[in-house]
Image (cartoon, rainbow, N blue to C red):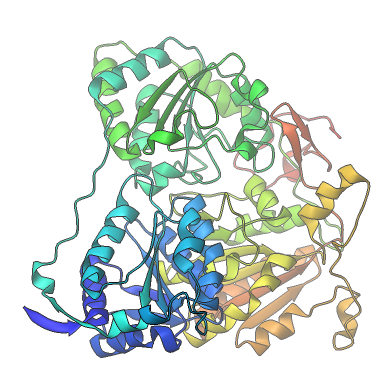
Length: 598
């Protein structure tokens, strides 16, 4: 056996477990681990400007590709508490990240030492495991357990807190005899698959709801194969968007009260059987459960047993990894297709397909200031099938999900349940790390963008190029819209006369100047007809300079984006498309005139 510091063992374990991409900030209490990383050289480290930003970078990296586990590093005091929002965002969406904090020495705990905090207790509610390691010999086992937990069942984050003296202690450790712990994968049985298909066969209008669990399980191909075998339309959730390409004939659009399509809601309301796979029946997807559930049989497949029945009791629930369940369903479905025992859903699938050419929202506005719908139309033109979009929260995300197109798994990366403002910039940098050489386009409102704008400097320092579209109405737009129900517009305006930005027309922050001051490139657009050229210029600048490029679009101050309370009660505040020219980048030309609904 070899004697080494625990931190040297940690670095060897990270390498063997395949977690070699780290984001963080060094500090006195974590410097021993940094010294081990420097000596070893096998862990690539990206220096963040804020530890919350580092945690979101690790989150974005984990989401970027199957099997990725981003690592976030900092001290346990203010750095550890800064990580909590990142832990919450990854925990809420079932994303594995590993946070490692440096702590005061064991003898100093509970003595109010400088920057010492009980981070284990603080992090416990938003992690699968939070542990302060008090004995040096426990360090290898703690990391072994952490990686097993992150990969087992519903994925999620882990925090390991290492006191300074524990980091410096020497232990006997042999990396060659270290083995990752086995990961148990629950699998649907044949009998369960047969029952699911029996329930489906008893229906006339079945749909599959594809959740983020399909993305996590890397099971998009299996989803499409099953849908094609059965001829069943697929409704992705926001977290499952891209599991089936938007232009696939069986893609039925997204359902919900915010990030949804009118035709998708109509399809869902016409359905009588719903097979949910790897989804959580989130309230922005379901709206009121009385409307959502009425007249439908529900089957729910999820890897986490306690998710079954959490929101409502399905008619049949199955605990299984999404890929394993889909593989089993494909096996049984193929036998039934060959035996002629699967109902013909061609008419239903055709009805859903044709519905996609109706009820479209208008995107082609020529207004100045620019209406946001036109921005997404031009993004569809400018950015192709290979684009990965990154976004988090706000009217920009909601409208983007209503109007953009996504063509593959992990090409829409979104902090869905937590929706933390500021997530987009650092997460996009993590995605760029996880998708080297691929096109990454981020989407933010001005407030989300301002929250962690300093992380743009990380992209400039480390040459992480991507395009960041900032739709600027100088408002907390989603909060302003929700305040309409209270008859107020209170403390949500970001507008002011900037003495250093006389041409800003009262929009306040000069995002172009800030971005350039942080080492990036930036373009401002005020005319909708200039959007296409601006996106092309931004892509060219990112490729040339290898830095983030901001495209700031000056929007009209007030736009209300379509949303409501129930699937059958969505408010359409803007004109709907009447001719194909009103929605020129819709995947299906408009079939017939549609009335205005307010």
